[in-house]
Amino acid sequence: MEINYESYKIFYFVALYGSISKAANYLYISQPAITKSIQKLENELGITLFNRSPKGVSLTENGKIFYDFIKNGVESFMNGEHKLTSLKNLETGVIKIGASATVTRYFLLPFIEKFHALYPNIDISITNHLTNTLVSSLKKGSLDLLIVNLPMENDTSLKVIPCATLHDCFAGNENYKKQFSKKISLRDLVETYPIITQKEPSNTRAFLNSLMIKNNIDFHPKFDIVSYGLVKDFAKIGMGISYITKEFAEEELEKELLFEIPIKEKIPERHLGIVLPKNTITSFATEKLIEIISNN
Image 1 (cartoon, rainbow, N blue to C red):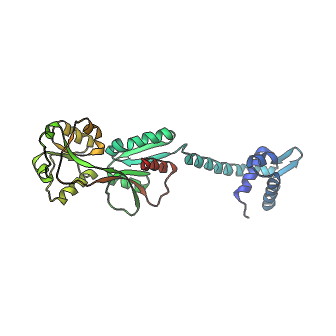
Image 2: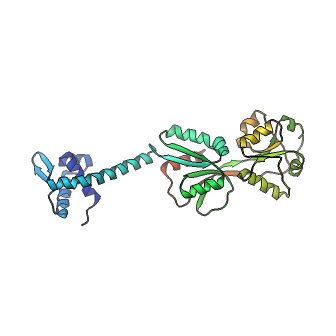
Image 3: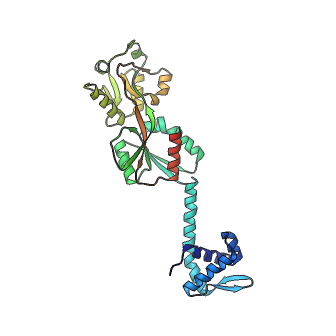
């Protein structure tokens, strides 16, 4: 016996309203089509579901038993449809984001503010951790997307979308600024002055390490610090010269709390990237956040 969901749905609404005409109006189906569907369902089941009268229709005893079962199924389907519509219209849902505290504060926060203003009913969860830990959580399904410093270790199960260009530099306070009337080589800088960097295994530190290796420099910074904010703070009070990202230190550079140290070598650009599972369907809310970030 092959009975489709539409037949059950029509039966449900006819029983609910006790009227073929009212069910037809609600479902936007003609009354003859409703009548034909009910007759077909009764024939396939081999029972009479409705008593017919000039005043309308009412369930038979067998029809009442059948309705009790059909009611839960049809309403469950409709609730699912309503939930999906709400998710699609961004009226409900949650986005689970993974990023470092630095990326969250200096890059992601304005986009979250804009997204929340547009879709206030979407909950946002942010996990701050090292990239390797975040990637593991993404693969397990605990996170929906990551915003991380690139490059990262190649992984064929992940999709990476570059979303911002970053420019690194060395910076010191005003006392150090006075010592650099002309460019200094990278080697002379790190061998002569105390260098302040983020602690391994941050991606920023990994990028700096690779720059040192490329220039054949044995690199041992004076201060290894976990917090990017403290890297800047140490430089502001004159503890040494920090390795910072210009885009994440705009305020300090604009207010001249820090000054870029001119070096002879060019520090390559690097990027931030949105990381997604390659074989997972992205939620409507996550797609919208990615769109907001990509468009800006």
